[in-house]
Length: 113
Image 1 (spheres, rainbow, N blue to C red):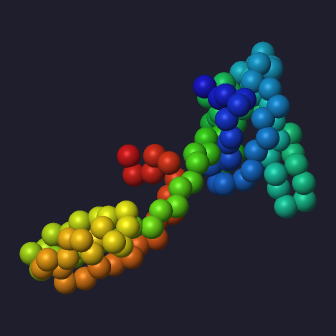
Image 2 (image 1 turned 120 degrees about the vertical axis):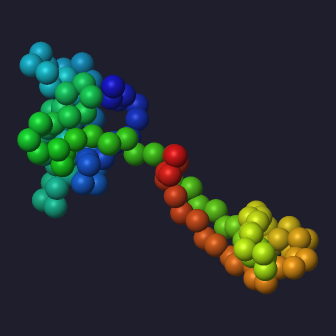
Image 3 (image 1 turned 90 degrees about the vertical axis):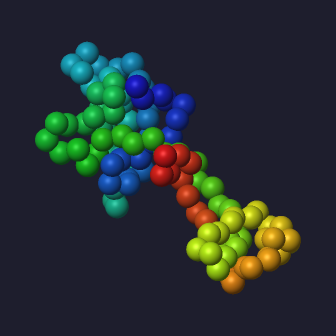
């Protein structure tokens, strides 16, 4: 169910504004607009965010928060590895380490679950 307090985009990544979640009686309860190159265009979706059974590109997808993290990965000679939140912690476990790799993570909340 679409929540007016959450942020959405279309399946193909276009920005969306939701104006109402209680409109329409013909199955299009969600009213809003989609941003195109030349401006905003009105659109209506079903209560589940589906715009059409034919072209699903404009269906609503919830935008989850993005997170950024830096981690250090110790790589060991026995084909194992360990991940640390700081370089200092990674250096504290350097016995038999063959590499310490800095990794910049940029991910959407829930990604990969």
